[in-house]
Length: 510
Image (cartoon, rainbow, N blue to C red; front, side, top):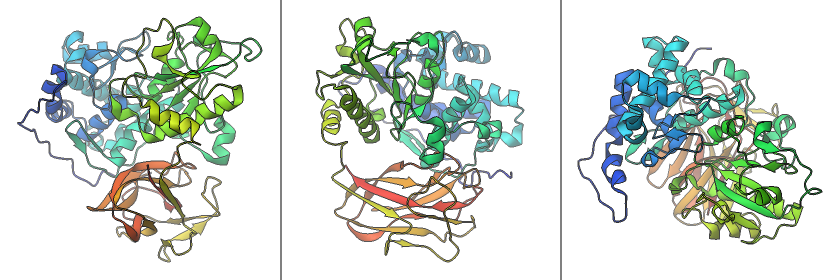
């Protein structure tokens, strides 16, 4: 396969000379957040790592938050999540490579980013990436996967895909910006690994959760839970809400690590609400820190960190609430704050999750109100009369069972836009979530451009259509004008490889 190089030029780094002091903000946050752009630029240059890729990796791990040097659940530190635990010693490796003391790598953002870049570059060197290959962000895929130290190929792919998703959709957080860009990720042998983001008939037959079919199934280590026969041995009468203090892929990998001695029944992803089950409902997961509550409850972990509200997305709330509602209906658990509690409410708890940023009002409304129906939503399929337009260059296919509706459209990538457009009547000007549906296949486009006609002009994001198909996938929230108009387009103008797919879009107002 011929790999496409990123067409967009790397962003120039700028440093703001103004420090904004917000009342109530901790001193470490005031001092270090404005310096993040410079820290990423310096580390990328020092170790010849693509700057935007370095940012995307940090975003997938921590949303660029160093958490004042406090460790994650798996013993990871800082913006780059340098880990020190029995099976991952990236913190110690960073200290060896940079000559910086571990304590500084833990607590100093700039040092931590430099250490993360050094570790990532060491993985690239081991894989044999030469100077030319290092200029192509897509060639770093397997090095990124190794950085995550996943416990299996499928989790390595899940981890790396999350990083590359950041490149395609773009990042704008804590003063650091990455423009959405075309990148063809070279998965190598990991292309053969099971796609845990996959949905649809074929995918679910292979990976579906045994207790909650919308979820994927990845078993936790048998060292991290107790086999039981609930509800014969114990009645299940509570759902306990947790926050992972780590990433989605990292948490799943940690629960597979025998040394963890912890687990939860389910893990929920921040960006799109994807769910993985890791312990059967009938078995006792070790999540509550209280044996009596472990015996009688189901634990749900949510990707993110307690002190960072950016992880708690509407997609996460809706997906988790649908799961909780199903569990309450199945086991007769009250749909109130007696039956659904936070980890911090377990007697004897030493944890504070889900914390003050968790919106219990929104969550419980979604649990009791039928899944949190948006105030307005519309779905436009490629077959919706009068609302989909495409040139004769777009073919029609029924090949994939992951399709939305009866069929979908496809076209070769070319150096011309020739977009397929979805039209909708937006009821009022405001912010809307845009989701896309496409069937995934190894022969589909590695960087499909989705154009959103926002109030401020067209914005383009790039989606790898080789994975994560057969489900609604959020490509972001956008400011839209009121009225009937072309809202979302799928362009053919990409250096990504494979057919560009246009199937369906969904536009929702919370």
